[in-house]
Image 1: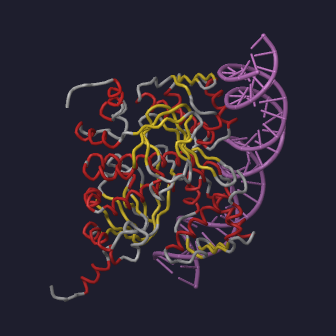
Image 2: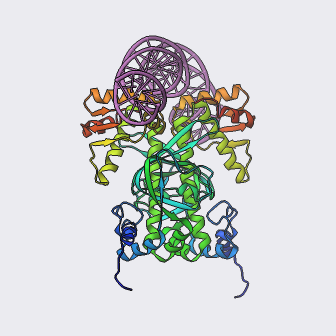
Image 3: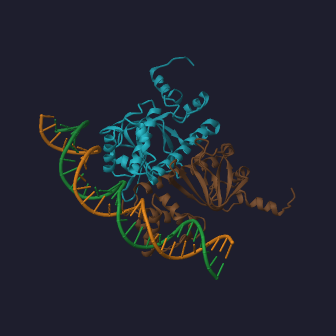
Length: 244
Length: 244
DNA sequence: CGGCCCGATTGATCCACGTCAATGCAAAGG
DNA sequence: CCTTTGCATTGACGTGGATCAATCGGGCCG
C-alpha cells in the first residue's frame, strides 16, 4: 500500500464517479461518499463515440445503460417508411439507453452529434449493486421516472403548442441545462442541424429557420448559424403560454 | 392453522396477485409462483375511483404506484394557461403513477373515465421487496422502460404523422390492447370523448369526428357514437406509412 | 487561395387542419 | 312525456406551417 502514484493511475482515478466533476448531475447524485465508492466498482469502462456514429442502434441487444461524459447525443426512432423522429438530445451527466430494459433490445438509436465519451454501466451489475446500496436503487428509479416526466413534457409541446412556443421552450430548456453544467445560459453552440431541431419539435427545417430569424428580428435572441445568444429570456418565456 | 375459510377470506384471496386474472399482464408478469407470493404481501390495499374523479393529481405527494384492476383512466398535464394535454389512456393490468418517483410528487393527473378500481402498491415497500425478489426488481424495471418506449411512440405519432395516420394508429393500438385482455379486437366502446382523443393525438375534436366519419365512409370502421367496430384492420394499417 | 458542398436562409404558393357556427342526437331527470 | 344537457356531427371559411424552389454562406480540402 505504498503511495506510489504513477500518471496512468491518476488518469484512472479521475475517471471514477467519486472524482468525476459530473457526479452531482449524474447517477451518483445525492449518494453518500461511501455509496459512490460502490458505484466506482461498477463503472469502469468508457467508450468513445465519434461524431455521426451510433452508441447503439434500434434492435441492438441491450446490456448496459450509459452516462454521457463529454459530447452530445441525439436519440431518434426511424419508421419503415424512412420517417425519422428525434426523441431527445442528451448532454453530459445524462443517462441514456434505458429504452432497452423492457425488451432486452434497444428501441431507438443514440447518435453522437460531436466526438463524445460515455461511461458504460453494465445493467445487470447495476441491478445487483442497487440491491445493496439503497441510495443507488432509489436514485436509479428517480432517473427513470424523470425520463418519463421529460417525455410528458415533450408530448405537451408536440400536442398543444404552436411553432413559436415550441422553439422558445426548446431554447429555454437548452439554456437551463447548459447553466446547470456550468456553461453560459445565454450563449451556446447548437450541436444539431435545423432539420434535427425540426424533427424533435415536429416542424420542418424551414419553419425552424424562419422562427430563428423572427426571434432575432424581435431581439429575443442573436443567431449566427449554430451560435445562439439569448438576449431576452423573459421575452421567450412570454411566448410560452400565448396560443394553443 | 385450521382450514376454516369464511367468505370474507375468499374475497381477500381472490384479490391477491397470485389469483388475479390480470397477473400475466401486470406487475407479476413472468414471475414464478413463489415470487408472486411475495408480491401478495406487498399489495393489499385497493382503491375505488368513481368516474370523473382523480386517483392522483399533479402536485400530490407520491407514495405509491397503482395497477389498474378494472375501469379506464386517462392521464393528463395541465399548463398554467389552461391547456390540457392527455398523455395516455390506461386499462386493466397497466401500471400508473411512476411519474411521481423522480420528485416525490406526481407530475400529472390520473382521472377515471369510468368507475374504476386499482391496486395500491406502496412504493418504498416495492423497493424493499424487489431487493429480495430479483424477478420482481427486473420486472419493475421493464415496466418503467416500456413506459419510456411507449412515450417515444407517442412522440413519433405527434411529431411526424398526419391526422389520419394518428387516428389509425390510435385505433389499432386500442384494438391490440383490448385483445390481449380477452376482449374483442374489432368491437369496443370508447371510454373517452372526441375531445380527449383529440388532445391525446394533438388534434381538435372536430378533426377527430370528421376522420371517424371518413373512415366509416371508406368502410374501414363502423362508428356509432362511442361504439366502434373495426371492419378492415389491413386498411387501417395501410394508412400508417402513407404520408409525412 | 479558390472551389466545392452541405446546411441555412428566404420567398411564393398551397393545403391540412383549425376555427367558428349551426344542427343533431342520446341519455338523464323533472 | 318533454326538457335539459353534453357530446358529436357537419359545413363554410381562415390560417399556420408545409412545400417547392432559388440563393446564400462558411468550413474544408486540394
